Image 1 (cartoon, one colour):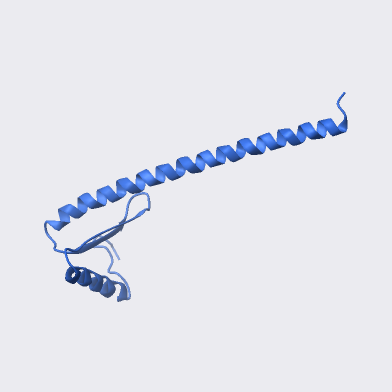
Image 2 (cartoon, helix red, strand yellow):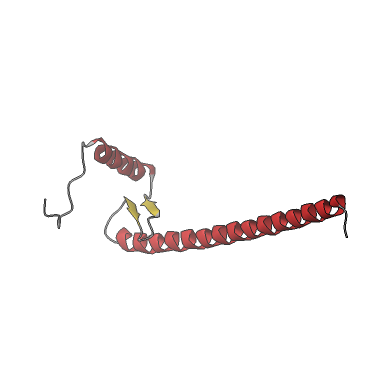
Length: 109
């Protein structure tokens, strides 16, 4: 029959092993989550670049701001020179200084 000291030591070792396994699982889950987030963000930015290239055919300079279906914010801007960049920034300031954005066209308010 093991002494109290030996059984206590075995319990501590088991607790330590359990904690180490749990820490390792949490670390693996975090790594996996970060990897998936990085891939999603890359895909979102690539999609924004594709949309941006289409818009470039019609507009000299622009700022695209929105959210995807997962709730991630997407931004993409295009300006060929400093004058165009200043114009886009000025337009953004004008929009943000308005008291409220107009409702969507399909809104029934």
